[in-house]
Image 1 (cartoon, rainbow, N blue to C red):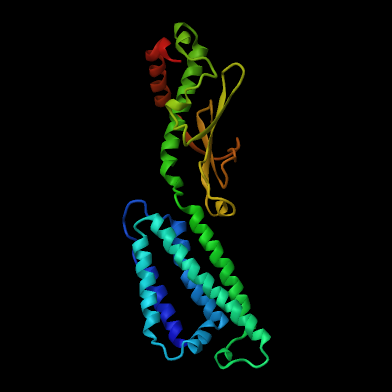
Image 2 (image 1 turned 60 degrees about the vertical axis):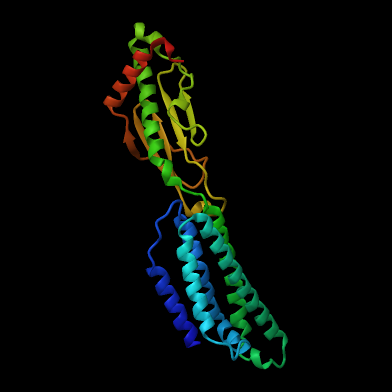
Length: 295
């Protein structure tokens, strides 16, 4: 028992001391977390359930060096998988299968110990009160961590955040400039697109950005919502959040962090950005220069 505890401690210390490899498209933090946790959870619950004592009896006479090589191999697999998230998902799948087998063995040993009146020699250490709960917990936690890996593969929400904010500011500056020209009247009014015309694709990536716009009937006010993109499937969406934005003719941009793609930012959310006068002037010049060609 002490021997396995020392091995487990060495594994955890080496694992958390290792620095991440720098490469293209490495696993996201949630994928790495799930991958790294599976084996330590298996080891802790195996200790709690008494599985190591049973395994020692079943493998009596075998070399103890095998366990050390397995630990070193697991560490190497984690380090190599840091090069690409696909490798991280594969390693997490392999670790998950190993942990599920251990959980199944613990249930088998625990249930078998309950049924035997005279336990066989190799099962004398089997305690169903410890084995069965630990086995069930190991299976449930492993399934959750494997699902977490699948949910977060390809999930990089922070990549587009700066671009979306910049696009929102520029679009609002355009709308505010158009309103200003409409209010001023004169010849420039004929150069301004009518409210309701779509120029969203000039500012946003419509293949990835979810944008909703409402305007009042007179075209003197507007509200634009920029909603977050893809989220992991339930319940893993609650392990992450993305910004949801709201802007209007005042030039103020408000933001809250949400856990789904349909949550609109409310009107009383904190202001995080504001369209400047310079940005509106730049949009005014662009509208006037474009003239009748603007559609």
